[in-house]
Length: 356
Ligand code: C2E
Ligand code: MG
Ligand code: MG
Image 1 (cartoon, rainbow, N blue to C red):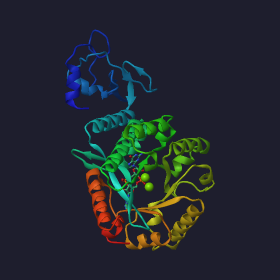
Image 2 (spheres, rainbow, N blue to C red):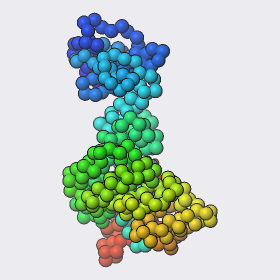
Image 3 (cartoon, rainbow, N blue to C red):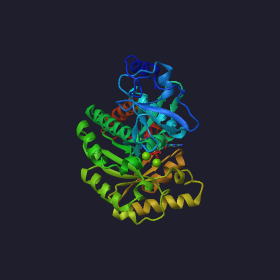
Image 4 (cartoon, helix red, strand yellow):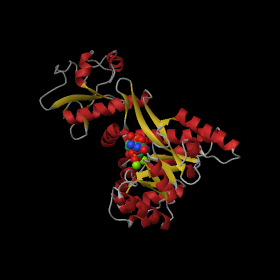
């Protein structure tokens, strides 16, 4: 929490614990943990930081208790305060627009057209540089911050995709990752619907990615949620396919459109016969079930050829394009459009990037 924020609070009078005398100064620490204060807006700060300014705040503060109930002044273990400090830092980052979406292109393996993008979170930290989502999404997931963050991602990705469509760029499907915690929230379907309404993006351009593990947590509940999302008109994709679960029976009970072959299999398709066999089996099964397949993490020409020759639908990977800021992605679409125009409507972006 920034000092300026703290000082705003300090400007007004009123003791921290609602009593008439200031609480005993402890530097906010004790043997078991630290004191936290939660203000009326739900902001959380360690007590010692409040003491570092003046101790007075506008409203009597509330302190988070161990059992998650709010009370005036309680101690919580360091592990929880660390998590909450992390969450505060993420909340600040979202407000300061340090959290951004990058877009990684997906190409049709057969026509070479750019047909999609996966929206991927990045944290452009002022001092730590670009932070990978693998290091902050688990914390957002644990603290629950993933819920507002995920909503922002959905809103932003839908709005951006519609902006590209409005600019008459080649239309693409945008894939948005939904985490396990988001998936379990009742608000998921209305939240997505709202993002579609707000952005005016037609639902068939949205693909929702959930991992196999998430879908398998409770098959009956997942089947119902996926049916709802599918009814809405959005596409459903199983991310990291092949890594999460050994039973394939769920494929027939879920409303699905796409399987994304995990990078761990794609890596070895041209060097490890077992990986090639698994990838071929997934492609054959998807064909029989009428599902599309995306090969994720394609890095070499050989891998590209492998998937194209076996009827894979979409290719995503560093070989063809890394995740990039929205402006760069817009330029990529513009280039694809110009090339398509010059070729009478046939866009062959794959060949621009070196060919299959
Ligand atoms: P994911 O959904 O499986 O995303 C694909 C990851 O593979 C991305 O990592 C992407 O940059 C990386 N990748 C794509 N092609 C290649 C390649 O050719 N080589 C290599 N080495 N990597 C490649 P990233 O962006 O670091 O994201 C990691 C994970 O973080 C994602 O895995 C997803 O689970 C999660 N994530 C990212 N953005 C979001 C988000 O907005 N919401 C949620 N809930 N999770 C997100
Ligand atoms: Mg994904
Ligand atoms: Mg994946």
